[in-house]
Amino acid sequence: MSTESVKQKRDSLPGTARRDSRGQLYGLIHAERRTSRTRLAQLSGLSKGAVSGIVGDLLDDGLIREVGTQQRGGIGRRQVLLEIDPRARFVIGSQLGDDACTVVLVDLYGQFEREVVIPVGGSVPSDYLDAVCEGVDLLRADADAPILGLGVGVAGSVDGSGRRITVAVPFGWKDVPVADALEERLNLPVRVANRAKVAALGEHWARIGQGIDHLVYVHVGSGIVAGLVVGGVLSFGRDGLAGELGHVTVLPDGPLCDCGNQGCLHTLASGPAIVRQVRAKARLAGHLPLVQATNGVSAQAALEQVLVAAKQGDQLACAVLAEAGRYLGIAIGNLVTLFNPQVVVVGGMVGRSGACVLDPLRREVEWRALPDAIAGLDIVSSVFPGEESGALGAAALFLQQSEVVEAIPASGPETRHAPDSRASTLIPA
Ligand SMILES: [Zn+2]
Image (cartoon, protein in one colour):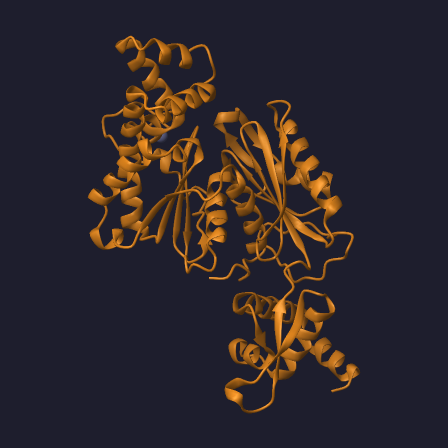
């Protein structure tokens, strides 16, 4: 077929159908890793001519490449194999931590290229956004391919369109237009989500190739939030509230929670709840080292002291953490029965603290969840030492919710990311 007739064929597809077909074929090549035009036609239901035209477009854009040939069953014509060029475009992910922002550059398969951690100089939103912009500028300066966009994991609740923080209690923030502010400064499309929820996607990406499609991530720090990956996709619920595990009831007549309920998991197993109990019990027991270590400092600093004491074998600190682990196990046992995950990952400062929390947590899950749901279930700590899962997950979310295969000029996209753009199939199942 001449170049002119291929071009005519490509141009004959109506705009929307053509874009949808590009997305479909790109998603199939991404999922199959290596495939041929014939196989793409079989999988997509498109004609061989339409597949050839779109594959030509994707080759022209540098998004895919040809990598040798194969002959099926040793007979017939040899077929040219195609694969995604993972480094044809990059995505940046960022996590707003408590006192620093982690910013990562990843390729189209989520492989880390580079990571920077930028300390935050103050406590207002602009201090954090300054740090994100500094990190993005550093990574963008070194990247040798266009950046598609930025995903940002933030503390607190995010509106349904993934653009602004509605409220972040630990930071005392309300109604922060994160995506608008960053898009204006960086000239990149931006997507925002709760940092613990996107961390579930980061943990999922870290396990791609292990056949993990159903994963629950539970962040236990100043708050308790779960990210639910169901069939490879992060679940947000109607208003983005899915996974607010800190506010499920685990003790009907327990302490009053800020949300108005009694006995929420947050009042019994979050970082502030652990510090409150250690302070009270240490004073009652006359445990002077723990009294001194946990009073007159912030709740965050006090929690660090409790975790250090537990690691050194302090019985009182371990007992309080074990109690928190039991309550976490009750809530996670319910999640296991409801969602039947393959893996439960526990992260956050408390979740990463080790056996004092994890052992009683595991025992409680094993006792309470349905036996068939526990069979083959892994309950593990995060594979990352710091906040990388949130930053990686934010990048993954951006890829899942953006139209990556649209032609993007080397200088960066000119149009803003549409908040309601359809999910594509870029993350392999
Ligand atoms: Zn509550």
